[in-house]
Image (cartoon, one colour):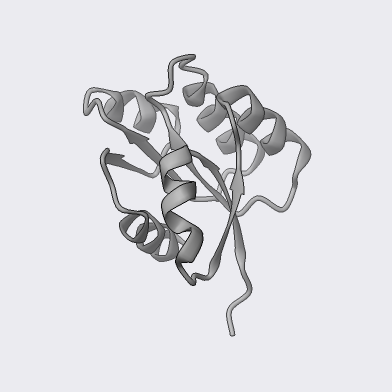
Length: 115
């Protein structure tokens, strides 16, 4: 059996939808982009991240940069309702971008493939 991968998630909808799904991924919630940055800095066991870059404070792009700097090889998926955020997310180091709304199953399948 594969070990659970710890994935930092900055997206309340994804966390809520995923409650009933079995996965090889353990979701670690972040309530804000600053919280995500703090968690990235303090938890060496983060294996990946799913970040809503369309959140109002726009610090999610800095969270991508921080994660990419601290852990260059972890997969990062950026989410946003605004497709124009895709380029900026990729420039900051995201491996993939998905336009919201997205289903938790689709996001987690993508993360599992990126591992």
